Image (cartoon, rainbow, N blue to C red; front, side, top):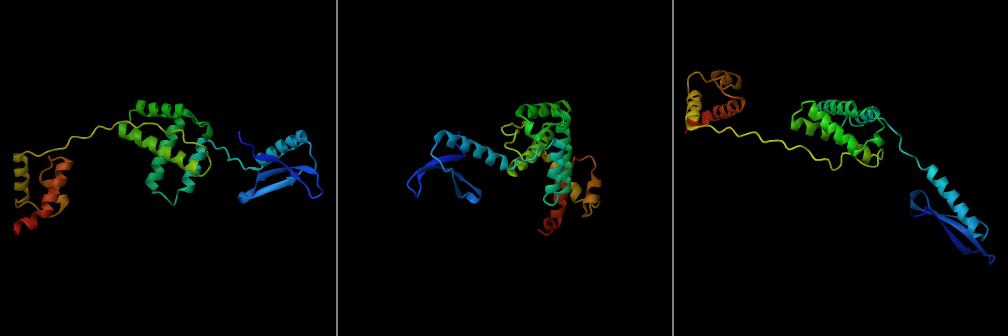
Length: 223
Protein backbone atom coordinates (compact mmCIF):
# COMPACT_ATOMS: atom_id res chain seq x y z
CA UNK A 1 0.00 0.00 0.00
CA UNK A 2 1.36 3.44 -0.98
CA UNK A 3 2.17 5.73 1.95
CA UNK A 4 0.21 8.97 2.12
CA UNK A 5 3.12 10.64 3.93
CA UNK A 6 6.79 10.19 3.07
CA UNK A 7 9.89 10.99 5.06
CA UNK A 8 12.71 12.95 3.47
CA UNK A 9 16.22 13.44 4.85
CA UNK A 10 17.37 16.90 3.89
CA UNK A 11 20.37 19.07 4.68
CA UNK A 12 19.48 22.20 6.60
CA UNK A 13 21.03 25.67 6.20
CA UNK A 14 23.19 25.02 9.25
CA UNK A 15 24.75 22.03 7.52
CA UNK A 16 23.11 19.30 9.60
CA UNK A 17 20.66 16.72 8.26
CA UNK A 18 17.07 16.61 9.47
CA UNK A 19 14.01 14.61 8.48
CA UNK A 20 11.00 16.18 6.80
CA UNK A 21 7.49 14.88 6.29
CA UNK A 22 6.14 15.32 2.76
CA UNK A 23 2.52 14.79 1.57
CA UNK A 24 -0.04 16.07 -0.92
CA UNK A 25 -2.45 18.52 0.68
CA UNK A 26 -5.58 20.31 -0.48
CA UNK A 27 -5.82 21.37 -4.11
CA UNK A 28 -3.04 18.88 -4.94
CA UNK A 29 -0.27 21.02 -3.43
CA UNK A 30 2.78 19.39 -1.91
CA UNK A 31 3.24 20.11 1.79
CA UNK A 32 6.32 19.80 4.01
CA UNK A 33 6.96 19.66 7.74
CA UNK A 34 10.38 19.69 9.39
CA UNK A 35 10.83 17.19 12.21
CA UNK A 36 13.98 18.91 13.50
CA UNK A 37 16.00 15.69 14.01
CA UNK A 38 17.77 12.90 12.11
CA UNK A 39 16.41 9.89 14.01
CA UNK A 40 14.95 7.60 11.35
CA UNK A 41 12.94 5.44 13.76
CA UNK A 42 11.35 8.47 15.37
CA UNK A 43 10.69 9.93 11.90
CA UNK A 44 8.82 6.76 10.85
CA UNK A 45 6.69 6.98 13.97
CA UNK A 46 5.81 10.61 13.26
CA UNK A 47 5.05 9.72 9.63
CA UNK A 48 2.47 7.12 10.75
CA UNK A 49 0.92 9.60 13.17
CA UNK A 50 0.63 12.18 10.40
CA UNK A 51 -1.03 9.64 8.10
CA UNK A 52 -3.63 8.81 10.75
CA UNK A 53 -4.29 12.52 11.20
CA UNK A 54 -4.83 13.03 7.47
CA UNK A 55 -7.10 9.97 7.16
CA UNK A 56 -9.27 11.11 10.07
CA UNK A 57 -9.64 14.53 8.46
CA UNK A 58 -11.05 13.03 5.27
CA UNK A 59 -14.84 13.26 5.35
CA UNK A 60 -16.33 9.78 5.20
CA UNK A 61 -19.59 9.31 3.29
CA UNK A 62 -22.60 9.21 5.56
CA UNK A 63 -24.02 5.73 5.98
CA UNK A 64 -27.60 5.45 4.87
CA UNK A 65 -30.14 2.69 5.11
CA UNK A 66 -32.03 1.77 1.96
CA UNK A 67 -35.09 3.81 2.96
CA UNK A 68 -32.84 6.83 3.50
CA UNK A 69 -31.09 6.23 0.18
CA UNK A 70 -34.48 6.19 -1.55
CA UNK A 71 -35.54 9.45 0.11
CA UNK A 72 -32.24 11.05 -0.87
CA UNK A 73 -32.65 9.88 -4.47
CA UNK A 74 -36.21 11.20 -4.74
CA UNK A 75 -35.21 14.56 -3.26
CA UNK A 76 -32.16 15.03 -5.51
CA UNK A 77 -33.94 14.00 -8.71
CA UNK A 78 -37.38 15.54 -8.15
CA UNK A 79 -36.71 18.21 -10.80
CA UNK A 80 -34.87 15.84 -13.16
CA UNK A 81 -37.31 12.97 -13.70
CA UNK A 82 -41.00 12.62 -14.43
CA UNK A 83 -43.38 12.00 -11.49
CA UNK A 84 -44.32 8.65 -13.03
CA UNK A 85 -40.65 7.61 -13.09
CA UNK A 86 -40.22 8.64 -9.45
CA UNK A 87 -43.32 6.65 -8.52
CA UNK A 88 -42.00 3.54 -10.32
CA UNK A 89 -38.57 3.89 -8.72
CA UNK A 90 -40.13 4.17 -5.28
CA UNK A 91 -42.29 1.10 -5.89
CA UNK A 92 -39.29 -0.96 -7.11
CA UNK A 93 -37.06 0.16 -4.25
CA UNK A 94 -39.74 -0.73 -1.69
CA UNK A 95 -39.89 -4.20 -3.24
CA UNK A 96 -36.11 -4.41 -2.94
CA UNK A 97 -36.34 -3.51 0.75
CA UNK A 98 -39.11 -6.07 1.24
CA UNK A 99 -36.85 -8.72 -0.31
CA UNK A 100 -33.63 -8.09 1.65
CA UNK A 101 -34.59 -5.82 4.56
CA UNK A 102 -33.83 -2.18 5.33
CA UNK A 103 -30.06 -2.66 5.67
CA UNK A 104 -27.29 -0.09 5.20
CA UNK A 105 -26.75 0.64 1.51
CA UNK A 106 -23.01 -0.02 1.69
CA UNK A 107 -23.73 -3.55 2.96
CA UNK A 108 -25.69 -4.56 -0.12
CA UNK A 109 -23.92 -7.29 -2.12
CA UNK A 110 -24.48 -9.11 -5.38
CA UNK A 111 -26.18 -11.91 -3.42
CA UNK A 112 -28.80 -9.45 -2.20
CA UNK A 113 -29.43 -8.45 -5.81
CA UNK A 114 -29.91 -12.10 -6.77
CA UNK A 115 -32.36 -12.49 -3.91
CA UNK A 116 -34.31 -9.48 -5.20
CA UNK A 117 -34.32 -10.98 -8.68
CA UNK A 118 -35.82 -14.21 -7.36
CA UNK A 119 -38.29 -12.24 -5.23
CA UNK A 120 -39.64 -10.53 -8.35
CA UNK A 121 -39.94 -13.86 -10.19
CA UNK A 122 -41.70 -15.52 -7.24
CA UNK A 123 -44.06 -12.57 -7.11
CA UNK A 124 -45.29 -13.55 -10.55
CA UNK A 125 -43.96 -10.54 -12.46
CA UNK A 126 -43.43 -10.84 -16.18
CA UNK A 127 -39.79 -10.89 -17.43
CA UNK A 128 -40.13 -7.32 -18.73
CA UNK A 129 -41.42 -6.16 -15.31
CA UNK A 130 -38.59 -7.97 -13.51
CA UNK A 131 -36.08 -6.21 -15.76
CA UNK A 132 -37.76 -2.88 -15.12
CA UNK A 133 -37.58 -3.38 -11.34
CA UNK A 134 -33.88 -4.26 -11.48
CA UNK A 135 -33.04 -1.36 -13.82
CA UNK A 136 -34.80 1.21 -11.62
CA UNK A 137 -33.06 0.08 -8.42
CA UNK A 138 -29.72 -0.20 -10.24
CA UNK A 139 -30.16 3.41 -11.37
CA UNK A 140 -30.53 4.55 -7.75
CA UNK A 141 -27.28 2.81 -6.79
CA UNK A 142 -25.47 4.15 -9.88
CA UNK A 143 -26.28 7.73 -8.92
CA UNK A 144 -25.17 7.04 -5.34
CA UNK A 145 -21.79 5.87 -6.68
CA UNK A 146 -21.45 9.00 -8.83
CA UNK A 147 -22.18 11.20 -5.81
CA UNK A 148 -19.55 9.44 -3.71
CA UNK A 149 -22.14 7.94 -1.36
CA UNK A 150 -21.14 4.38 -2.31
CA UNK A 151 -17.94 2.86 -3.64
CA UNK A 152 -19.54 0.42 -6.08
CA UNK A 153 -22.84 -0.67 -7.53
CA UNK A 154 -23.83 -4.18 -6.36
CA UNK A 155 -26.04 -4.59 -9.44
CA UNK A 156 -23.10 -4.36 -11.85
CA UNK A 157 -22.85 -7.50 -13.94
CA UNK A 158 -26.37 -8.72 -13.21
CA UNK A 159 -27.94 -10.05 -16.42
CA UNK A 160 -31.51 -9.20 -17.37
CA UNK A 161 -34.12 -11.77 -18.31
CA UNK A 162 -34.76 -12.48 -21.96
CA UNK A 163 -38.10 -11.08 -23.01
CA UNK A 164 -39.83 -13.11 -25.76
CA UNK A 165 -40.85 -11.02 -28.73
CA UNK A 166 -44.54 -10.83 -29.46
CA UNK A 167 -45.52 -12.43 -32.80
CA UNK A 168 -46.32 -9.94 -35.54
CA UNK A 169 -49.98 -10.02 -36.57
CA UNK A 170 -50.08 -10.39 -40.35
CA UNK A 171 -53.36 -9.77 -42.15
CA UNK A 172 -54.59 -12.30 -44.67
CA UNK A 173 -55.76 -11.09 -48.07
CA UNK A 174 -59.38 -11.66 -47.07
CA UNK A 175 -58.98 -9.69 -43.81
CA UNK A 176 -57.28 -6.82 -45.60
CA UNK A 177 -60.06 -6.63 -48.17
CA UNK A 178 -62.71 -6.63 -45.42
CA UNK A 179 -60.91 -3.79 -43.62
CA UNK A 180 -60.78 -1.76 -46.85
CA UNK A 181 -64.46 -2.50 -47.46
CA UNK A 182 -65.32 -1.16 -44.01
CA UNK A 183 -63.19 1.94 -44.63
CA UNK A 184 -65.08 2.76 -47.83
CA UNK A 185 -68.50 1.96 -46.40
CA UNK A 186 -70.99 4.75 -45.72
CA UNK A 187 -70.79 4.15 -41.97
CA UNK A 188 -67.20 5.39 -41.76
CA UNK A 189 -66.54 8.83 -40.29
CA UNK A 190 -63.08 10.29 -40.04
CA UNK A 191 -62.75 10.00 -36.30
CA UNK A 192 -60.79 7.33 -34.46
CA UNK A 193 -63.44 6.80 -31.80
CA UNK A 194 -66.18 6.16 -34.42
CA UNK A 195 -63.86 4.06 -36.57
CA UNK A 196 -63.19 1.69 -33.70
CA UNK A 197 -66.94 1.14 -33.28
CA UNK A 198 -67.41 -0.05 -36.85
CA UNK A 199 -65.78 -3.39 -36.19
CA UNK A 200 -65.30 -3.95 -32.47
CA UNK A 201 -64.02 -7.50 -32.96
CA UNK A 202 -60.76 -6.26 -34.47
CA UNK A 203 -57.80 -6.35 -32.08
CA UNK A 204 -56.03 -3.21 -30.80
CA UNK A 205 -53.17 -3.59 -33.30
CA UNK A 206 -55.67 -4.08 -36.12
CA UNK A 207 -57.65 -1.01 -35.02
CA UNK A 208 -54.45 1.05 -35.20
CA UNK A 209 -53.84 -0.17 -38.75
CA UNK A 210 -57.45 0.51 -39.63
CA UNK A 211 -57.23 4.04 -38.22
CA UNK A 212 -54.17 4.61 -40.37
CA UNK A 213 -56.07 3.44 -43.41
CA UNK A 214 -58.92 5.80 -42.59
CA UNK A 215 -56.48 8.71 -42.29
CA UNK A 216 -55.20 7.89 -45.80
CA UNK A 217 -58.68 7.57 -47.24
CA UNK A 218 -58.95 11.15 -48.61
CA UNK A 219 -55.69 10.68 -50.53
CA UNK A 220 -56.91 7.33 -51.91
CA UNK A 221 -60.22 8.80 -53.13
CA UNK A 222 -58.46 11.59 -55.02
CA UNK A 223 -56.35 9.18 -57.06
